[in-house]
Image (spheres, helix red, strand yellow):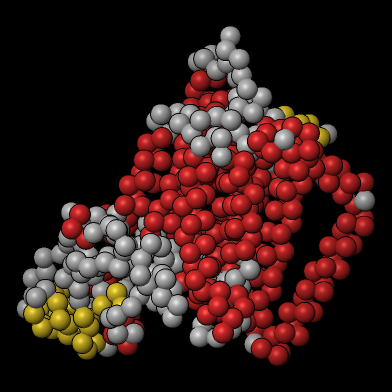
Length: 490
């Protein structure tokens, strides 16, 4: 029988705390469901429909019962269904979240089938984690690399529009042209690009993962200082994925810490409930007073940002306490899993390959949204680019050319684009036309000035030859294109 390294995925940590069993899959489930709850509570534009309610309940159940495969599978299925129902309107890290959900759901099916056929040397949960961890780690590595590569462009390093300096100014509550922001702009901008690419490379190789784990945790904590709930939500998602790179010894230490904390809370249940009630009361009073001073919306936003940041600090403290427990006993290299990157189910690596392809699409002439170009200032439209080394000559798709300039319209959506002095890709323009029953727009489009009218769902005096289709509209989406430098957008 082959010798198994104690820091291999196969050496799954298993710690029992009364009724709870924490293995690496349970630990990841708690973290993943927890960050999923943060996503649901962060984005106001998520439709609060029946599917949202079911997903919210399933997510809470998965947090409370992380060792139940059915609870996990239900959450994953509902999450994927909710995302599909509301495509293409996602943010970048939600696409990564969906891919990891799909990998994990496939791994649950593989673990169950192996167990049913009597082919699993390990239990169902261990077999699931074995199939899942490698492809999921690969997806995280790909996300970091594409995100860093996208930032290698002129506008990202422009201190007046670059996202690093824009977010730095937001975090410091300072103007982008202020002395402190100007002084920190270059090191923060270069540091962001280098850190993201370095994290992707360091996490890919087992000998360097022990360096990436603390660097990545601190990097995402520093991002969460920016008082924007969406950035904090991304930090939660990224920090949750770091559980995949931990050795079983760290998982054991974290499980001990969580289990001991749960036991203490049970022993002092009355004090715990009373403390929680007091904390909630203080928060309600603080938000009420702030609402009177600065307005309801801003008070709620700042309260949520503060809570999210505090929760992330607690989570990262748990990570570091668990890491330090192992470092003191076994040395720093023992904190990272010793498996090579390419482990797990080859079938599930197909999803990771899709993540890799997705990140390449802006450079190949396809979609520009949800392709890991978040906060990068990247421009690839209209046969031009601001990227340092990826040329538009490699574009094989014809979805970013022939920009549409809106000249006159009464449609609010198109008027907002015109007011911002932005243009639209032909695909995104056609998406808007296809959703309207009645619209009139004058545009510089399709190689000429023309007026397009649609009445009761029928075009008048115009036969459209659309590149847009409902199916492609679910997987392709494009941002509006500025006339000049690319400002910081998600």
